[in-house]
Image (cartoon, rainbow, N blue to C red; front, side, top):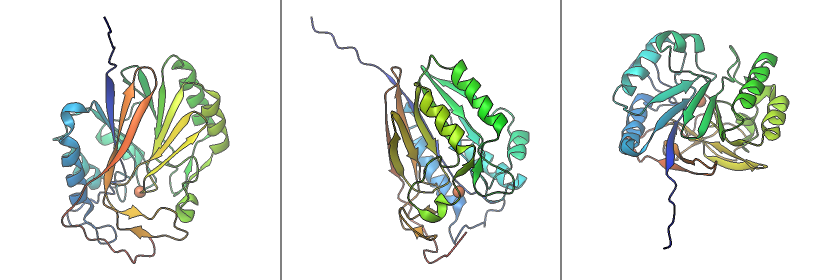
Length: 267
Ligand SMILES: [Fe+2]
């Protein structure tokens, strides 16, 4: 008899950079970010039966206000998939923790995988950083979870994505130590982030590197100066298999009423 074992996979959804304002009429570069988040979430919930976990990788809020987080949490109420978040440069991590105390664990178990949710935000700074204490903590977490395939999720890009202006705001402090740590740990399989508002897929040795489009405004890949792209918002999925292998892809969500200021020179 010829028997083939089919390995089931855990589906992780990554949603990033919603930039939600506190008021329903808030717009980012002319775009109603509340509306585009609703549309992306409804596309994601179409897959809810097959997704096991959702992670929001920062810039949840446009301005770190309590009202914006309350508005975001309200939008997430229909989401039945367990979900977590981590802060970006536009966020207020303390406010996030006050309003949703259990949404930001350090480690999430998903099948045989462990996801490390990192905070690369630095108050008052657009670029990211990891302090010496945070690097030490990541070292500990890598050691404690060495039996499992790992995905690291964060807001800032640890490597340049090729858009010059946003690469000026990448992970800075602690970057060399971070790269040394993850490349030295044989079980780190993937790193995924937001911040760059565009799709990016690459490798660092055996580690898959992925950036995910925003649920709101898109930035132009390969651009020198700031540039807004006409691509639709989207999200990313990962199918994580217990042996540490995975598949991933980005889904764009066609939004009928989509208006953004493509000529904008900054945000
Ligand atoms: Fe952002």
